[in-house]
Amino acid sequence: MDADEWGRRIAARKAELGSRLCVLAHHYQRDEIVEQADFVGDSLRLSRAAAERRDARYIVFCGVHFMAESAAVLARPGQSVILPNPRAGCPMAVMARAADVRAAMDEIASLTEEKVVPITYVNSTAEAKAVTGSLGGACCTSANAASVFRWALDPAGGGATKILMIPDEHLGRNTAVALGYDDGAWAIYDPVLPDGGLSREDVRRATFLLWKGHCYVHQQFTVEHVLAVRRRGKDAAVMVHPECARDVVAAADLAGSTEQILRAVAEAPPGSRWAIGTESHLVRRLARRYPDRAVACLSPANPVCVQMQRIDPAHLLWTLDNLADGTPVNRVTVRQEIAAEARRALGRMFDC
Image 1 (spheres, one colour):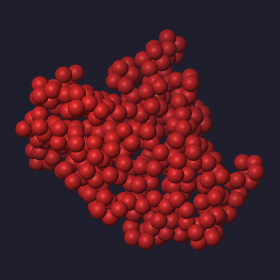
Image 2: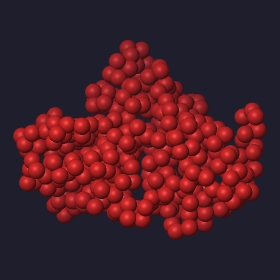
Image 3: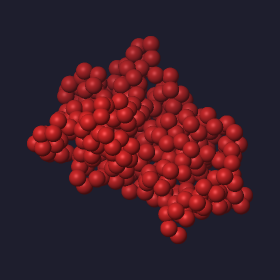
Image 4: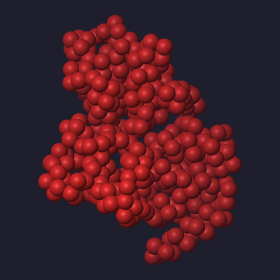
């Protein structure tokens, strides 16, 4: 089938399923998936959208596995969350297994008597979120990491003197800098090393213990890319995602989450120029949406989240065909005891 036929068949199935169905799509999805979505957003916004669609029996999440898990944790009884292709995972999310997170907290506790609170990025498994919730910690997004860090270090909030940031060291480091901390305020916890490779002195001096993890897409942006924009001398504003390395964020003009990047370009004046350091599907979509602004990807290689692209029209149509036949496929479920603790961590994030 050509693209138009895929689109017609998907639209027909959506019409047939009506209000029983809600299709969510992350900003990094391909255009033909975004065009079929009822809601488009980042992982947090989409999970909230799923929870608010109380009439929808089926939530089809066009994203990656941890996003569908979060939606399943927040979904009401009777709702089914479905991931069209179960091979759509997230390499960063599996860099922090739940057992390793618990072991890390035990190891760090053996090196300090100070209170350490785990803060886990939403780009993580439900099990890691659950461990975080059970240990008094919270989840965060790239948009609200600073607020969650402040809560964790507030005596009236998390009451911690130190934070274990899981699993993205770059988001943790960039957030610490945004809060006014300097290079001596953090140390890297490597889960493959005894005690994370940390000494008592490392833990004593550090306010932020950063899990050795990363997003491979955002590591493709370099300082040289920023300098290349500067050399072209066309006054382009460079804005990057805080999952980028610290030196890239420092060289850029602005850093922000996916939604903050969208808002910055939307509110910019016509004629403005932008070099954006994030997944290229989002950047190209922004360029088409605002033709009176020059929007380009910071890297000429146009970095792509390969896992997101595993959701394609064929998988989406197959999913909807099965729903129409009354045989849901690829349901994402989270055990009740895991979901309860994960909701605690997510709830603390929502309160910040």
